[in-house]
Length: 78
Image (cartoon, rainbow, N blue to C red; front, side, top):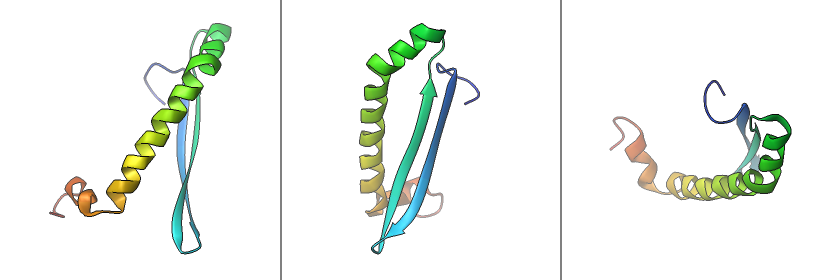
């Protein structure tokens, strides 16, 4: 992360084939600024929030990828 609210953030996607299906696994790490106070906020509030946010976002991505809806995001695919 180059700019933003977090002092550190890394989000990686790992794809693999399992039983003829594509499985995506997320690796998401973040750290808030403000030292110990930031780490407390991370654990108490942000960890759960960010997990729910990514799960909801991934559900939307799955529906989009498995339908024709993905076409509107690629130039010239309509």
